[in-house]
Length: 577
Image 1 (cartoon, helix red, strand yellow):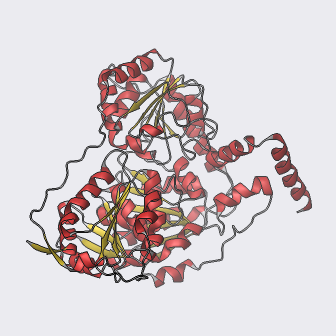
Image 2 (image 1 turned 90 degrees about the vertical axis):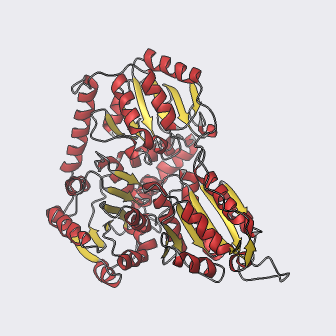
Image 3 (image 1 turned 120 degrees about the vertical axis):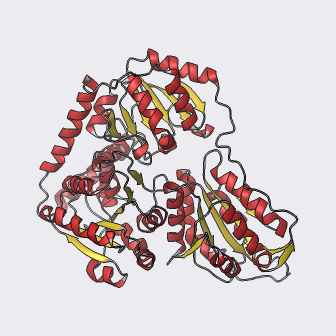
């Protein structure tokens, strides 16, 4: 049969169940976009910037059963999209990154966008592919898909030269989509037996769960109940364990964690860490204690014991390993509801929230009261997104994520600008769910124009903009060692006329007294299919435990001379101004 490369690409994506692609068409992708426009299944979504497109594709993979797909022009489109591709790469999120390519049927040099795309994309992807014949299109897309979702997930790149797209070639058969193998290594029974023995011999076990454990919540609960083990999560794994479970502590453990986690894990001599790499964010700049023995389970063997030595390292899919462990441990007949550990956690959680509620916000919005109100307004299956900044850690410490709520945020790449476009994609794939974004004003400025995409599609996404006029996470990090701010004060944006210009409703939340009414107005507008911009005059004067702990951990690592120089400079500037 005779098919164009673009038609073959469309067939492959349809067979993989793709529902949306994201990007901006250009001279090297017009044939692809024409084919996608003919599909009854796939909607090509126009964005305002390819960076937003990559964040949208990332969110599709995080919040649905489909894979996020980028379709962009080579060179400029790819370089614009690289921030989102890098985020997916470091966070372990599968993406199909597809671009056109310069013509390969001519000897002309210096073609438009003529550069080595394979070399460009190699550091940011699991694998790169370049199609040279029509009969490669479908098999190579399938191979790329299997690579993206197999093992530790991540982005892959496929380059389709423009001449392959618009010319016809002979294809003898249309292969079927691949069967995915999440982890090629067979789970070893001896590893599970050794882990079970260590868990049962422990004085007190603690569970530390990351993004990789998100598909195994039921088994994580079984293990926690069986061992009466407190549970902490990484930032990316915030919803790997329900926050309304009495053994849930919070994000992280150690001196930079919330008090419930620090207190509950202080007695733990064995840590069961699953689907978490012990990276800089997950450990608050490597400040968690290393006295306990660690059973480390991860699909990536390179992560096992990389930063904290593992007494037992198990290369496995978290869902498979947690089920095996849960099956091997004694079942808890009935979950006790009032143990000393549970009381400790509950008391520490209540005291920490009260500490925040009692903090004087001086006519602004108290973060804890805001999250209390948002918790009441959200359904149990809502999707909450954050960007990168101080608001991220406020949400991590203060936003209750019980039931089936989901939380996503840029983590290891830590890329600002994620929330606005990612929330749009989350709503596209989950139209019946409430979708809210919590974003700092600096991050909002980066991708705010993507709200046009939400308006055009009637997507009722609510953006709570924590507007304090600063890049507050960095400003707070500058305050202690420098006692001054450099390039962290933002120009003023008038949110009401901006919201009108992009077709969004505008709500102002100026003080604590506005919280309930502002939330009610925002959710009412969103229910009608209109995006909503809520300007929150947030009080950032109280620092999160994470911020204080991470700053202290970094200062403590300085040598004596450097530490004295920083302290001396800060004291001098405090006196002299």
